[in-house]
Length: 168
Length: 248
Image 1 (cartoon, rainbow over the protein chains, first blue to last red):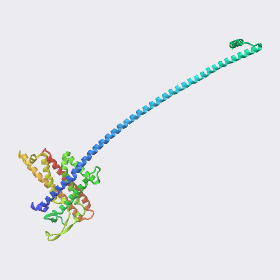
Image 2: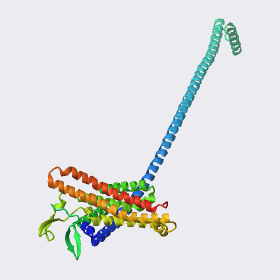
Image 3: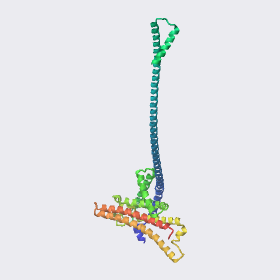
Image 4: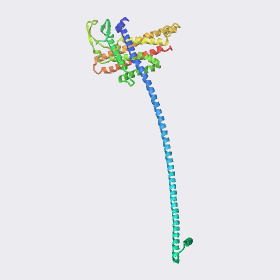
């Protein structure tokens, strides 16, 4: 046994040295490699998980917003359509009104003109009649060669006017 | 060609023998410590390439342990020990395969072999020394006991091995004790045997056919190095799980 151990080269000093070496390596690696790295990797994992969650939330919010936007747009479109329709309607109405008013005014102007013409015509006729009566009275007096009194002249004129009126 | 089962002494420091395997293990430890400090000095949310590599290794191991143990909290408890065992064994196995690393050394006159000149390399694969593998096995087995005691209580844990309630339990207790010692031996000799055999194989092949022929064996040894690291870590993990579970 002793011989075997010696042949294999087992030496207590070396054995203990190697144990100490390995234990030192174990503790150094634990302190400098495993502990910080595992802690760090767990932290990053958490960060990634929370980041993904946040991204999903953001996406959802974005989709919601998009939907809202579309709805709003549709609403606005509808509103715009109705406003246009209303404007068209009122425009048509206004047009009709204006046309009607214009027609009315034109009619009125025509009427006014007509009545004025009528009145003027009447005045003219009146004038003409009196002129003619005067003329006839003058002519009559000249034919009769006698001076007429003012009273007679007037009477004659009246009479002539009456005749003229009756004849026309 | 000289093949020594024991690791060669390179020099002696204050009466303490420094072997080439010890030197190699120091290199592995130094590399691991330097990388871990550089990688975690400035941890960033968007990792740098080195941080990325280290992170993915750590995460893979952690997930693997979690799958075996089935519990996140316990997995994080076991993780440092298992991960260190795996990384350290893997790195030292692979460091031993670096081409030409066994050729750096010096000649010494061996008094035991009638003054025959002997080549002593400075570096030799760490796990081709029984001291290293036995040290790892001792750490693993002691850690198993410590985890078992803290998980289910001192008295309950000891009653697994020493129990006088009935003869059957007494007998199984003795068996359990033997099993713990068997663990030490199987752990240390499996790793030692595989790596030492690999070293010898490579030396012999390189001696017989120096060109090209060693390459497939090199690849094979890379694989063996990985598998041995995995086996050591996995067995430790399984023993830890058994030691910390109540039903027994």
